[in-house]
Image 1: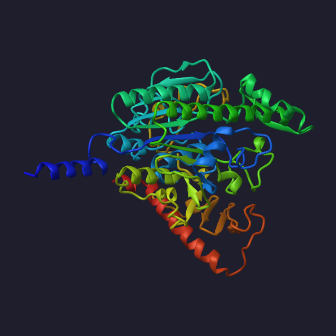
Image 2 (image 1 turned 30 degrees about the horizontal axis):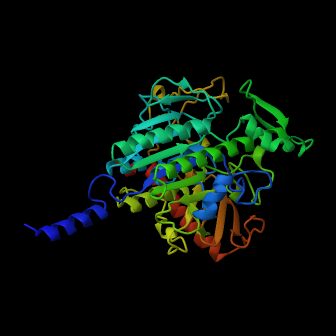
Image 3 (image 1 turned 90 degrees about the vertical axis):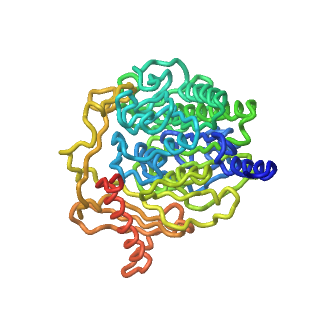
Length: 499
């Protein structure tokens, strides 16, 4: 039997190392994500119109990730990368409304096993949120959820823990923050650390805003004369054409409301004495859509592989550890979130291929380069064999209505398919390898030879000067690495990782 003093020291060490009571020394964690919020649409990145004082303050006092990327230039795939630490093509989430697979290991499941209370609020878009869905937030490790199958506007219709959807009056971002606060109160009463994933419905179109937020941007209504935008009508749910200035006024009002809501959450954390040991991580899910871009310094937009499509705001606050402002130009991506959190709480990574890396070294400045490149890939969905659905169709039918119609429905259904073997034709589609200096973009169009683009992204962030030359050793080496990465992804897609 150990002497009393030695036993006390052992027990203290056990607690500090995270092996003691649930939550000992573990940070609370909140992941925030804007919907279609591109890199340029923040005050701290120099936007000439937008007012984002809260994000600006986070950038000034926390860790600012200046080269943070979404894993895909669209929403559902990027969200899978956050949940799994993997490229979304590994589980067949190729595009919006493709679901995650039930066998994927979720970061929420990992944190729940480590003693965290877990919750999801807002946009899910990885499958239906209804109770019998095998890919709802509860099946992915969240104790509780108030969520939508897709995006939402003012007065959203949301499902609580899989129940029938119900309308909630109010501004969407504020509703989510209010729910997050109540969840945190319950978690702390239970003596648990908390993990909250808050995925806003803003600023995805169609746009709407509170009068006080619209008033901030009223001068924009006449700022872009004769320019129009094609987007969804809030009245019909069908496409319509409207003046660009009016659209931007509404879009920016949504971003400002989201920013204010984040501020309300941060303020409450401070009042509750929780801010110091709470890690708050904000990012976007893809670049700005065409109708919202007026000032971006980057090439491309949502849906493209240029930086305008995949570069997004990235901010981390954690006063207990990030004790002074830091700015990082290391390439980072949404797939890095899970490995980072696993290292922070001392949990092993899932035993399957991951595409993200831990960013813990950025918190103290010891990480100055990324040790592996980032792969991006828009799978050619025309090649999908749709004969063997991965999940029964009735389980993939969504229930939460939204303004934007798809076909003749105001809800969203999801899909995913079995992929039995790796095929040569499936290596196509737009794909990218991004290393610390160069970005290689490969595009396949039908039976034509691949087109290649190579950019020195440190010297040419606007991706204007294509450096591809015959026999280039840089291109040759990057193509080999890109091909090997794609092969690994396709092998995962066959379901090999689940066996």
